[in-house]
Image 1 (cartoon, rainbow, N blue to C red):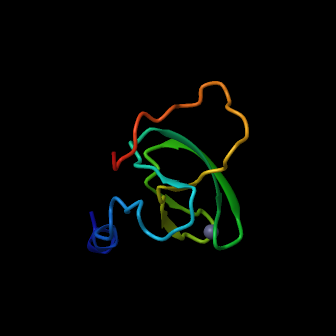
Image 2 (tube, protein in one colour):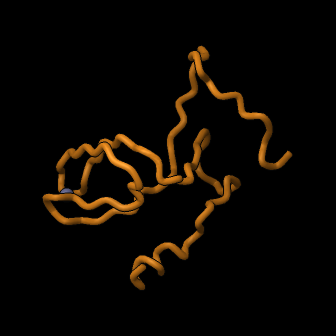
Length: 93
Ligand SMILES: [Zn+2]
């Protein structure tokens, strides 16, 4: 791992869920599994990839490199789709 990337990754690896960000929200720990991703690059290009191990991506047009953050938005529903995962308990229980 190069020094610049190593320095970037030293920031909080598991961000606290008690910080003052908007809720609902979530955070994913990437496990190197398959992902299908649409990406809007800073250069304005809309990109799509189907791949595995997408910890970092690079735009083929502007060559920008991005870390794939694990933060996700949660959209509250007024119904429960089939296959919904019931979380057993809270982290602070
Ligand atoms: Zn780009």
